[in-house]
Image 1 (tube, rainbow, N blue to C red):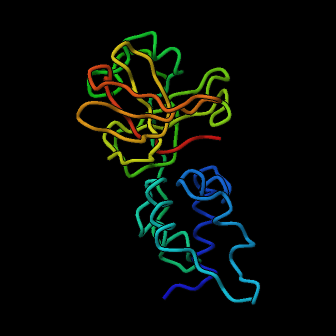
Image 2: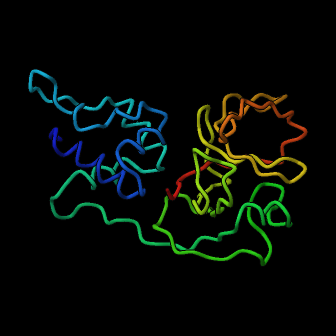
Length: 213
């Protein structure tokens, strides 16, 4: 059995492991930013309030964290699962990636223009990183933030993704809808509205697994 304190400890540690505050973790998962606030953990009647299974599922999905790894974060007992080892990711600035032939048709990085960075290990074996340049993605992402993407991770509605157009542009946004005819994307830029891209104009989509904020 898990205790109330252990579950909330796991959430706090999961946020820290991903470079986020509990509020940032909630936003990453598409939840209300106050979902994991300390004030939400105890009721006014001084009773323990537990996070919902839905909110737990969303943060595990948003951070690509297996449940057994989350259990390890909850516990202070010995023999808990080992933390992921680091791995080396290919990394390139987004503006440079737009100008050069750096991806194949499936969205995998190619060529010799990529740098490499060390990054905590992920369950995904094909991640790479794009570095935000400039203020075009404010307030969501700042200059210098790293977007860790996966060209193989499954993508569902409301996931944060990077879309590459057939013309080569890289667009970060929230997937609103995808059909056989079009992709609807809420672009992550101040004042930007939902855009509709015909499938013929979309080269690929890659899910954002992690953001260095």
